[in-house]
Each structure stands twice: as structure tokens, then as C-alpha cells.
Image 1 (spheres, rainbow, N blue to C red):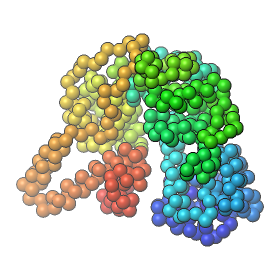
Image 2 (image 1 turned 90 degrees about the horizontal axis):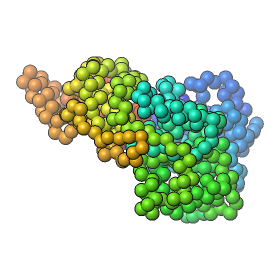
Image 3 (image 1 turned 30 degrees about the horizontal axis):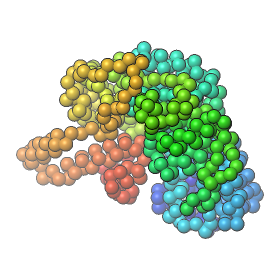
Image 4 (image 1 turned 90 degrees about the vertical axis):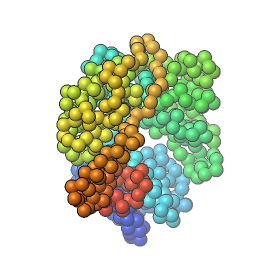
Length: 487
């Protein structure tokens, strides 16, 4: 991981942050002035640059706000945290207009400071992963006629700023299409900001979308920019728009109608220069009839509708997608890509995939970790795929059909309870009968290896997050990776 750059003329601040971040296994590089940082940036390659920049606001040789402005010119996506004394709060708030990730008031609580920096690191890594995935692979894969229709629609919309509604079942790749629409639009140089309106509690969603002023509610200690402001000059992707609370639909309609909005607790209108792309797996016409979705908002969003086909409607794309995901998963884990036999591909192609492309991707992650040999055979497939009857009947669908919700969630580690336990018992018995005297150590190491590799596949290689998911400490997972030879 690239280091966290700390800029402060106070040696004690640098020392405290360095030691705290080192304990969190986060590398650092320290500077005493803005001038040093700018010189280091000039000579740094992409791999040598900072993961996060943490800068004081008052320093000799240039203040933190000037540094923020210059750094954002060179690295617009770099999260910058501004450290400030209480007397400089107004200056710190103005830093948000320059794109600061957050501010850190002095004197700061060290655990909270580390938590904030870690949050910025995770956000940075998510963005890096998304950019790498988009740069290293085609935006979307598909030879099926239904997908070719989608590609042609994206091409026709490439020079337009028109609002687009993307419909389709869960897991069909709606965000990927939204990113492609942004990338090929006149707004490609601006930010792409995505928000899942169903994943954020109702009482927080308004602030998340529109931001809030300082003192707007309990805990609002500073002004905060919402997603509309973050997407200024670019594209805002509103996923699962059908789940947006009714009262917020009114506010969204007003923004789409007149291009202005107010932060929570604010009295000054903020102009929104944003293209909105919405997506849903629900039947919005039915939601309108049921009184759960505003009809005027529906018509405002439904300027151009782009329907994504379910994976079962484009089965001919499954072999190509499976090979692509196996390559992608192997690259993430640093292992040799698994190959898949024609018989296993035939089994995959006949599976209904209720979780669509996302489920296929998760199955391929699972195979990369769990398949015993380099060549994947039908017996190596996850139980619910291997046990499914061939050519299972699937619901018919036509382009005019209303999108239906997925009948099952995407799987991240498809295992049927009981199967692995029986296999463990059989393996233990075989080892015992062969006269082994270290059966406990052998099986424990293998189980721990599988658990850690599966968790790392799920978290895209992020060790600390994997440890949290497994319920173990970060030092424990680091030690186990070394002991088990998983580096």
C-alpha cells in the first residue's frame, strides 16, 4: 500500500501520528512544509505517491488550503484531511469547497484520528480498485443480442446529458452501465458519485444527498457537502431509486425541476450542475399505482429507459464472463488463474443464476479459492450449481417485460450445511487410518487457510476488513498469513 503523507511543522504531531498509524500497519511519510510535499509530488511516480494526505492548515512556506488546491490539480481523487486548531474552523470548512475529505480539529483524540484516516484509506482503495477494474478490463462483456442492444444505446447516449433510468434485476450490472454512460459523456472529466438510496437509513439520507449546515441537528458540528455537491460537474448515480422515502422524492423532484437545492438547515440555494442517472430493480409503474412513488418524479426520471437483460437471457455470454472473472479473481489474490472445463462451463450455462452476473462473479471467486485443482470440473462447482438440474426451467422474459426482483441473493461463499462437515469427517478418518499423528495440525492449518483466503477474496485482499469479518484481530490474521505461507 502507498504511504500516508503527513505534513506538519510540529514534530510532536508527526511523531504521534506516525506511531499510531504504524501500529495499524499503515505506512507513513512525513514532511515539515507544503513546499516539501509539492517537491516530492513532482518527482513521484503513480506507485510512489500518497494514499492519503494529512496536512496542517498553518505552516511556514505555504498553508494547508493552498496545498490542498495544488494537490487537487495534480491528484483530483486523492483524499486530503486538513488538521486545524479551533480558531481556524471557518477556514477548514471552506476547505470542503476545495475538495477536502474531512477536517481534524486540534487537539485531536488519537483513536478518532486513526479511525478517520482509515476511513479515508478505505475510500481511496475502493476508488483505486474500481479504476483498476475499469482500466484493466473492457467496460462490459457480452456478445448476446440483448447486450449488443445495451451497447448501442450507450453509444447513442454518449454525447447527451439526458436523464437515464436503468432497470433490471439485482446483479445485472446497473452501476457498470451508469459508469459507462458517464465515461463516454461530455461530463467524463467530472466526478462519478454513486449512492444506494436503499442502504442508508431514512433519517440520514437527506443529509447524505443534500449535505447539512453546521448546527442543523445534534452532532452536525461542521458544514458537510452532500452527494449532489460532490458530483458537481459530473454524474450522480441514484441506485435503488424505488426505495427512496416519499418525502425525499419531493426534494429530488425540485432539484431535477429547477436545478437548485438547500442543505439541511440551510437558507441559501445551492446550484446543482449534475447529470442524474437512476436505477431500480422494481416495477416503478406499479409503485406509482400503489402510491409509493411520485408520478411526476417517475416521468422526470424516465426520460430514457435502458433495460438490462438478466443473465439467463444471455446464456451465450456465461463462458466468456466466467473466464474473465476467474482471471480477475486470480489477479486479486496473486495466484495462477483456474481453467474451467467444457463440462463445467456447460453446467454453469444451464444454471438459472437468480443473482445474475454478480452471482456468477462470486461463484468464480469461490472457485479460485476452493477448487482443489487448476482445472475446474463439474464436481468442483459450488453445491447449489452442481446440484441444480440441467436446463432448469427459467421464467420467460421479453424486452417489454417489467423487471422482477431477484429470487435469491448473490452468494459470496456458496456452501451447503452438512456437506463440508461430512467431507471433514471422511478426511480425518482417512488420515487417522493412515497412521498420521498430527491430524489436528494438518486439518486445522487447511481449515484456517481456506477461511482466510475466502475472507480475503470477499474483501478484495483487504486484511483488516477480512479479520473483522472473521471475528479475529488484525495481528492474528497477519501472523496466520505468515505461519500458513499465504503471503
